[in-house]
Image (tube, rainbow, N blue to C red; front, side, top):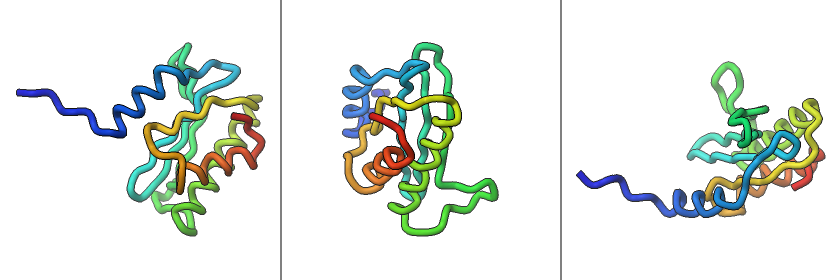
Length: 118
């Protein structure tokens, strides 16, 4: 059996991850976008830990209100708020192989509005 071929997004993500790494003082802001939701994590690659995470899902399992792009901006603001609470001001942005437009761009701009520096 042949192994699964890597998708275009996987190849782009591997190329990005060769360069972008996170530390405790400047963690990696990793973004994952599914067809319905968007997720963001602050990752310390040196210790292999997730410092904070935010998602467009609520605790009850429903999505935030508004369009998907508005939800992504809210997730960006939420992750910035969590980062500020932990004393993090600088992050390395990892777009996860997704193109920097639409929801990924909205999340990044929301994080910048929340006070994070890329």
